Length: 260
Image (cartoon, rainbow, N blue to C red; front, side, top):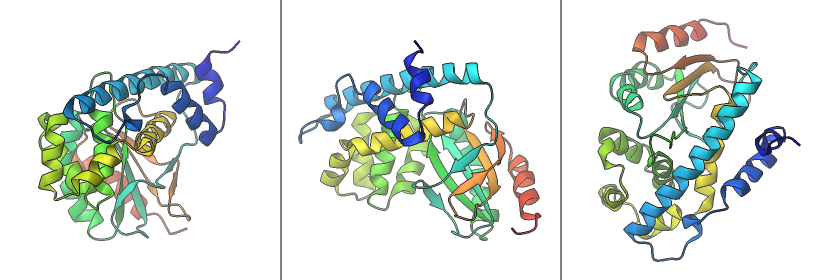
C-alpha cells in the first residue's frame, strides 16, 4: 500500500488540499476556539500551526525527493495580495516567511527599488505568497494568518511591513499592539485569527510553492502575465536574497519580448 503522502499528492489540487487539511487537523484546533481568546491561547495556536506546517513540509519534501525537480511550472496569483497595475506585462511572485532573515534583507534592500523602478511605473505586478518554514521559524505561519486578517481591513501591506521591520515582534503578545497601531477593529481582527479559512489559505500557498520547487525563502518567480491575468507559465526562478541586478536582468528580458 502506498504511503499517505503519495495518495494525497496524486489527487487533483482542491481535493488534495482538503485531505491535507483533514490530516493536519487531528490535534487541538485553536482556530475553531471560543470567543474569548487570551495570549496563552494565541501562543498555543502558534505551536499547533507550527507543528502542522512542519509535518506538511516533511511530507512534501519527501515527495519532491522522489519525483525530482518540477517541470513546466505554472504559478497562480489568484487570491494573493498583489501590488501594482493589473495589466502589467510582467508579474513577480514572491514566496516568503515572516521570520526569515533573508526575506527581511530583500524587503529592506531590493523590494523598495523594484517598487520604484517597475511597480510604480506600471511595468511589474508584485504578488506576495506565504511559505512559512515553521521547523525553524515557529511563528511564521501564524504571522501569515495575522497579516491576512489585517488585509481584511485594508492593512495587509502595513502589517507585512511591521513584521519585517522588526522580526523580534513576531510574538503573540505584540500582535494586539500592532493591530492597535494600524487602527484595526480589534474584535474583528481577533475573530479573523480564529477563522480556519485563513490558515487553509496559507497552507494552500505552501503546498503550491512546494510543488513549484520552492525549497527555501525567499523564492521568486518572474514571468509574462498570462492572458487570464492570474497565471505565469514557465517563469524565471530566482532563489534567495539576490541583488537588484538579478531581478533587473530577468524583468528587462521579459519586457523586451514582443506582446502575445
